[in-house]
Length: 576
Image (cartoon, rainbow, N blue to C red; front, side, top):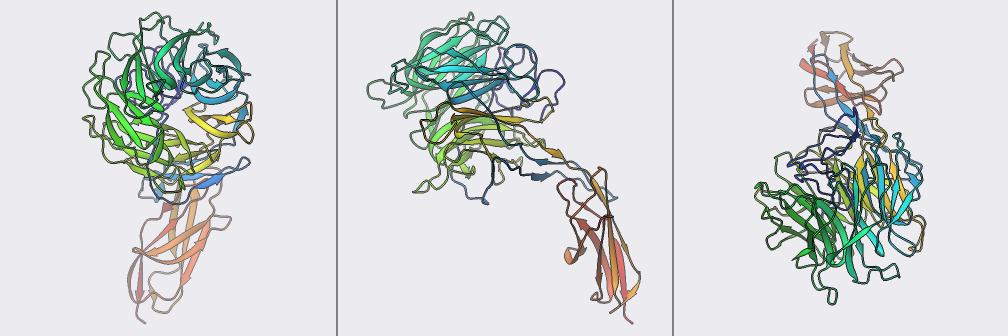
């Protein structure tokens, strides 16, 4: 399911079901509608529409304890997709690992990150929203194509806190533009329920942008933004999440919809009550009627809302679901179990325990009719799951989860099983403090999906200007196939007579196999041997009673080589 890079930027999207929508962090979001965008290759030119599936929350789940990787360490998580051949060969598996984060100055205290080709050179660039030193700013870091980036160039966003960014061609000139969720400028770098703003920075096509033009978002504390054609007129529209729908009471949140005129300008916002304060918005056709629907996550409590679309840019009243956690900060949409129906993935700051022992990431399976099943939750590797992306990071064709863990300064990766369930998290250092957003794409052109993470702080404490933008390059190794052969010292043998079984393991790669071999009789283990430098392991026994035995040798694999099992050897033992 992962795309192979030829020209352009490799991104990873699992059935986003979104025309050209961006939520919190955006991979590529240009103006060409896609009804169901499976993982694939995005053109470097603004002709393909890709939307990231980041931002999400999950509910309680108790799995195996996650492992943490420090800044100077690397961990390999092995996922085997194995096929048995007659000769005892096992093939096709990857060993997932990420290199330690390399950090960049994002231009402020970063809150959100997006990945797109902003200057048309076919190389992925980074866009970061920041809480500026006095005003909100957006930082642009042009990519070199090798996973490194040029120093940041910043632009004013017209407000005080730039929360979220989307990338799309909103004026039809073929050049990517930037759209920012912001809050009204009050000069103290704190929103304080001020009027929300949408900032539009039209692109020049060379990675630079024109001065911002702002629009009222229809609410206050505008924290998330998406771009999509919600009324099917072929013109990109803007959808925003307003934490507060009313600037005076902040009783409920709201979704603001700004219909696009096709020339980069937008109409006055129409708002929809979400019943609770919200922190994230995503879009997808969740009921299969060909009309875009909206999904929202409520950071103030434990709920996810669904607003079904009418296809004309209007939406039905919100339907609420329990998210399976507390502080549902972001929501993503993807088909995580392969049934062709969009599911919801939610990042929750806390699980449902009384003391917020962990965060959670929750999965609500979709029924295909716009309704969703009860949330199933997983431990993302720490407290404060702030943002989630859905991508196949280990190349096995199954969607995985990548989570920014705010209070642990880590990124959690939960490998998917392909059936909508996920394995225990492995965590990696984010490169800074308080990671608030993740985006996934191939940043260095090696065909593997890398991770960019926005860290609010560069040092300890909250007064830690500037933040840091971390880049974790995927260092996944393709494991080599092996062949295991088994021989016996004598056949037949007599009861009480020692028998030596010899397993020889060869590899298709250049690194000699190491580790152990399990010798089995049928389904029962009878002994273990360790491979020597020649790839040979032996086991001797005199305990086999008279009879005919089905003996096999299972090589357990190592960091470079796959496991494999021998063909059956029939060992006859006779009574003396």
